[in-house]
Length: 317
Image (cartoon, rainbow, N blue to C red):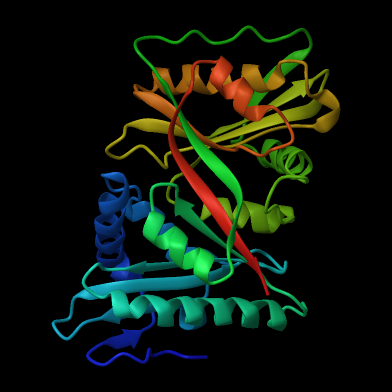
């Protein structure tokens, strides 16, 4: 696999944990040019480099110019044992000649990852801000097409937010015990089975991925039981704590057989109340706008507002 790029005056190497801040600065610069502000935290970058699905020795590239400045960051990352691979290419505006070679490299690495897993095709996904016309044009020219959209929503909290009244027979439990964590995992896997890009995970993989993240707080996992049976779950994290001082709903799932009973609304309002109690200014979440369930309507109906759209572009090789 290539570890260098065919461009004079640049050096290429693999990423290390010590590169977190430099990578974050490059991503922040590029994001600010597109959406007017930085959109990733140091913790986000650290979590990516520590992700068990990402092998920095084969799946990541850092490119520096002659002055030693980081001018590009590219990567491919498998999704479990599936034929689906996420990629990204971040290039400093001063080094546009790196763009094409790096897109070629990550696409080829994606193909190799799925071949190593025994698949005969590769589904390559890249997330692009809707405002990023330049990167969207590059994706289109390379055979990618928009596949779905993830909408970032925010609820603002001022003062105390009341906790919701629980429906009859419903009890809510936090994730500080393994029993509740296992129940949350089971509900999330069943609730997300038909969602875009879903890849099944067993409990150990699911728990290990989340527990290794610096933003995970198991006290923010809640599982709702109806007459003792786990039927809904919500996982909040500290991903937007930093400058935003906001909570983040990473996952919200209701078992298909129990949808339409207001359980999602109860879980969400409970997260709002908990975030307000923690002194947070708001709560964020992402929703697939093409989801077959009316999730977006639910979130808008409880006072959330759209603040950003990220489109997933996909190419099948």
